[in-house]
Image 1: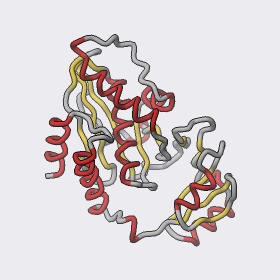
Image 2: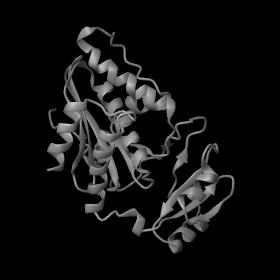
Image 3: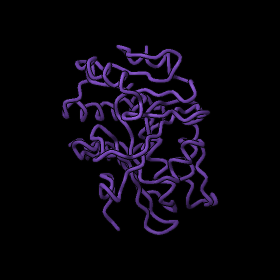
Length: 254
């Protein structure tokens, strides 16, 4: 089973790094298998990209062409659509109904959207963490919203916090998605604190490093290193718990 295999890999190697290419490729391949089983074989379903605000505006037939217009452009507004007809209609209708707004000044490329969706987007990776105590035993995981499949799950770390776990989960998801070149998937997190830390590329925990939490701080260092050395375009959105219930990655321990 994919869940058990993923968990085994995570236990043995704790937290993937880009240097651990062989193991990472196995892990990432499992993620793609989930998407394929859900009917998301991207190479067979071309997308069209609308750019409302960018270096040039209009409808573009490839992500690379769209990226040239929006990457590093402050206030860029853009979105993908499944066919040219809907893309052209959206371009004429304006960005407000479909808005992804790229936050100015963030080299990480985080995009934020006001959560006015009637229901969550199902082509998304939901991440969450659990911690028994503060600090305490901490773990985190990522779940594909459409199928409920667990994509990755960390081992249990001693002397962590929920915010640290949420932060690590987001970075784990960002790195995995970027490695596979996926452009149409988003990340949901119910932690605004963790999202803020990711945006700042810094885990702003008040926990003091000590021998008991050494493994936690090794994971934090790996995550901060990845954020410092990489950019990303994956949108990170707040999961609307009040409207949608618990996030799919929730551990159900409340």
